[in-house]
Figure 1 (cartoon, one colour):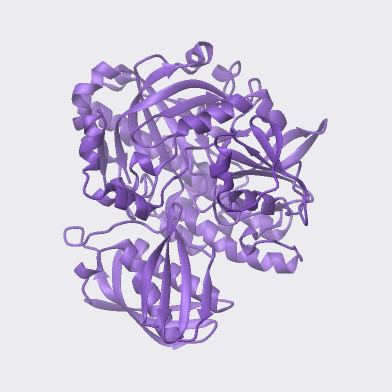
Figure 2 (cartoon, rainbow over the protein chains, first blue to last red; figure 1 turned 45 degrees about the vertical axis):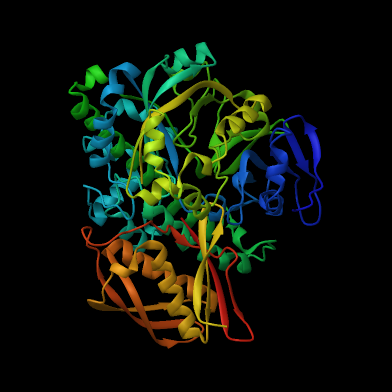
Length: 480
Length: 139
C-alpha cells in the first residue's frame, strides 16, 4: 500500500500537499469511508504527478471515482493556462469524447415491461455492438471529413434524429476548432465503418425507468417523472478516437524533449497548448469529439426505430427525446474565474463530467434555472443517476464532477467470479434482460465487477460539486 | 526460462508478459499473445499471408507499433492472424509475414476489441535466460 501524506480539508475533500516538483497541490473528493480504497492504489500518486505539469492552475483534482489510468488517473480534472500551460492526450484518454446520452420517453414502465425482451432483441439487432463492429453505415473519407466538422449535425442532416436533439448535447453536438488535416490516414481508415456502433468493453445501451426523484423542481425542468421509461447510450469515438490518441502520444513524446519539459512519468507526454504540436492535437482531437457526437446521434436514431418496431407505436406516442448528452473524456478551452479574475483555461476531464451551474450560457435555456444535467451510469444490475451542476463546482472543480462507478475487479477476476453462473439468467430473475455480443462480455461486466455508483454520486452531492436529481434503474441492456 | 506468454490483470484492462530466447521470437510471441486475447485462435487457419513493415524510434516503441499495426489491420480489413514470421528486425525497423484469414462470423469466435497498445508499464528486459516483455492493452 502506498503511503500518502494526506490532509483533510473538509469531510469530503482531501489534499496531497505540494512537494518535490509539484506546482500545485492535488485534491481528492471522497467520503472518509471511500478513502482507504482510493489510497490503496497508484491513482493518488498519478494525481500528484499531474500537478508537476507546466501551467497547471489551482489544483490537480480527483473525483470520487478516481482509479489508476495511464499517466493521468481516471476521474482526474486538470486545468492549464492556455498561454503558459500544456495539453496532453493522456489527460483525455484513448476514447476521445466517450460520453453518455440520456433520452426520456412518454412511456411508463408498465407500457414496456411485458415487451422488454422483444425491445432489447430489436435494439440488439439494430445497434451494431461488439468487436470491431461495422455499422450499417460505411462512409467514404470525404464524407467522414464532413462528419468530423459537423458532429451530430451531420447525422441530423442525413435524417438521423431532429434539429431539436442538438439543443441538448454538450457543445450542441459540434465543437469548433477542428482540423481534419491533422488526422492520420490510419484514423480515417479506422473510423470509416464504425459510425453508429457501440463498441466493446464497458460501452452499452440501457433501457430503464425513473425509480426515484430527489429534486422535484430539477426533475420537472428536465421533464423526468416517476416510472418514466429512459434510455442511456454510453459510447465514444470508436477506432477514430483511439487512433488519434495513439498518433499524438508519439508526437507528444518527442515534443517533451523538444520543449525540455520535465515529467515524473513518460505517459504524461504533453506540449504547450500554443505550440504547433499542441494545436495539431487540439485540431485532431476535436475531429474525434465530433465523430463521437455523430456516433451517439446515429445510435439514438436506431434506438428510436427499434422502439417503434418492438412496441408497434409511432414516434409521437413514444416521444423519445434527448434529455442531455455529456462528454467524459475531453479537453476543452473554457473561461473560469480563478482567484477573482477570468482566465482562459485548457480543462482536461479524463473520466470526469462537466457540471456547469445554473445560469451559465452553455446550459440549454430550458435548464438554465436548475443547471446542466450530469449523467452518471452505474453497472448493468443496479442503477444510474441524473445530477445537475452547481455553483460550487464552478468555484472548486472548473465545473466538473464524477463520471461513473469505476471497476472493482479486473476483467479476468470478473470472468472467474462469473464462472459456473449464468449471469444473463441471474439478471433476468431481477427483471433485467441483457444481450451481449458474447457471453464473455456479459461475464466481464457483471455488476459485482463495479463499485457501487451510489457511493460516488453521494460523495459528489455531499461535497456540493453536483446535486442528485433522480435515480434510474435498468429494465434491459445491450452490451458491446 | 521457457518461451511463452501469460495474461496479467490491470484494473479494467489486460496485459501480457512474454518470454523468449531472442528478439524475433519475442515480437512474434507478443503478437500471438495479443490475438489470443482478441479471438479463439484454435479456429483460425493459415489461409493467406500478408506482409507487414513498421518503423519506430526505439525497440520498445517498435514493439508498440508492431502490435498496433496488426490490430489496425485486424479491425480495418477484418482479418485474424495466428502466426507471425519476422524476417528483418533492427532496433527501429521490422519486416514480417503474418498468416491467417478473413473474419468469418459463422466460424470464428471473437472475444473482445483492443482499443490500443499502451506504453503503460511497458518494458523489454534482458534476463539470464533470454528476453522478457510486458505490454498492457487498453480494452
